Length: 74
Image (cartoon, rainbow, N blue to C red; front, top):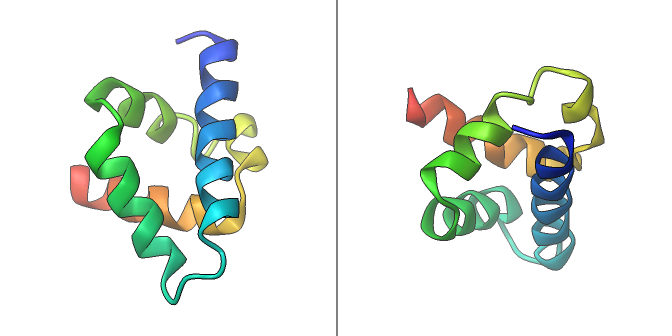
């Protein structure tokens, strides 16, 4: 996984978070969207950086959604 790919995935997750902040449960909406539309590889790549320096760039709501998905993934 390249740094560019990681940055793009984080950007995308944050973009989704910005678009659903008005919803009743934005964490669930983000998790549902990523589960439905991201490939297995995309999810695995972003899960791999959650606890690293790159993961610090995640919006807190996006991070919560990704952590929820990662917990269910394995």
